[in-house]
Image (cartoon, rainbow, N blue to C red):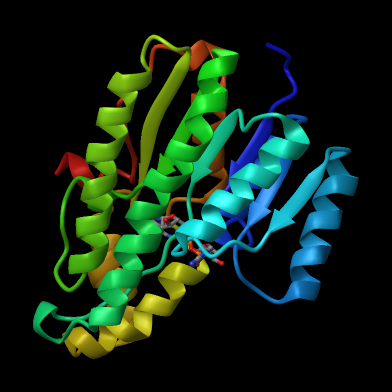
Length: 260
Ligand code: NAD
């Protein structure tokens, strides 16, 4: 197995996914970016990573809630690079709302993007990984794959679903040189978290400052947000050869949240 890998990171035009893509580029791997955003900003991100790290960087705008677009992206990546060696399922959205008022379209979108998309990328990318006898699948789950919080019914359901998928596929791939794990971050300071602060303040009837201190950081004994770089470094470790015996694991990186 050559050291040069092809890495697909879904939802890598922002936040944690962008950090993971840069981490793998710094390790010298070719990168497939995916996600939404302003096309000029995405092209700048793509060319900056390629130039800074001297690797190939491609961008696919596949909507991870659309099965045909996921299938087409994987087909095209495999046509150019042969296979996806490291698959990072990271794209995700959030919605904060009591269950009885939860917008039905948001429920459907969260289950599609945060859960079913991983099933589709995995089933499409796995045959080539098996052929090669090497692969790494890393799901960016959440502390919410292990515990719940009120007003996040769809997100918590989807992330718990990812836990089941992670364990099941790890068993199916265990003898093929492929590992599958889930990283379970606590609160990381990204646009996804920033956007839910006003939503949570409204739903709970508290100020935005109270959301940060009394909801988010209250959950984390360290009283600090997890950093993007910390999550990216953990993904890098899971993708390394020395991590070959770690599979089917749900790995918290949450400042002690789920130890309570
Ligand atoms: P973010 O909003 O910064 O990034 C989300 C990315 O997903 C963006 O690139 C966006 O364009 C992409 N995306 C959204 N919908 C998409 C779709 N339909 N198709 C393709 N791409 C789509 O958020 P983030 O905080 O970096 O979150 C990344 C992942 O980490 C998510 O799965 C999230 O649930 C998980 N996570 C985040 C935190 C946190 O505190 N930020 C904690 C635990 C887990």
